[in-house]
Length: 247
Image 1 (cartoon, rainbow, N blue to C red):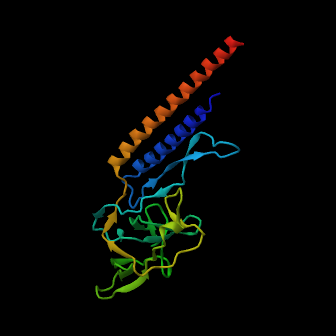
Image 2: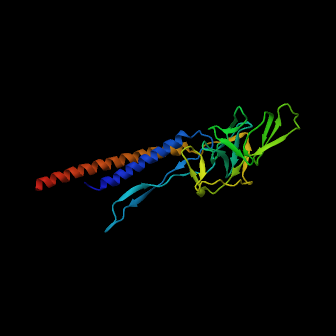
Image 3: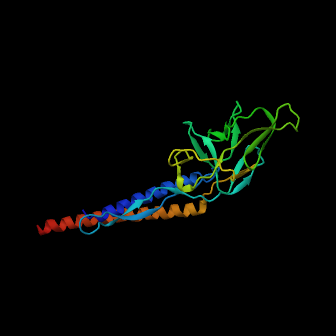
């Protein structure tokens, strides 16, 4: 069989992987704090004795777009957005520390501060738990203060301070749950320079127009590779017929 079929096959597979990544980005175009996934391809000749093989397509490990999404004012006290670089520390379902940019927070019936996905928000003093309050303020450095329910307006109590971190992107890995974690499994130290704004949210940084164009291009690439596989199969059949005739 003509080995060109394997080149076309790896190209078609890479195009399908690109389509899956683009579809994932489009599905999260309205997700708060979402970072668009990136995938790159490279030519990967298989080297061996003699000349190198034909060049196959190889998908590289996924990365992400670190640019900020559009900031939207909500006026909600529990909505926060990280300004510039940085992350909000949360506790995942396994009790491990992870990081997110999604600042649409809410309180449980027991006063635990959580993300919209149910991860517990971490503070410098541990998981953030708030007492019943009549007024809530989250400052730019993450400090949370409340006026306890039944108290006067000047009776302000500092409850906790959000743990905000800013590890290098090269040390972070994105997981299927949408959270980011350090590659070595450790916890990043709090960074006092990270700033947030309350009453607003950071939207997804997915460029929907660009993603749709990329989806069309990936579909065309897939069709071209499938056509190349079909041509390789036809060539193989013709060659087999000629060999039989000569035999």
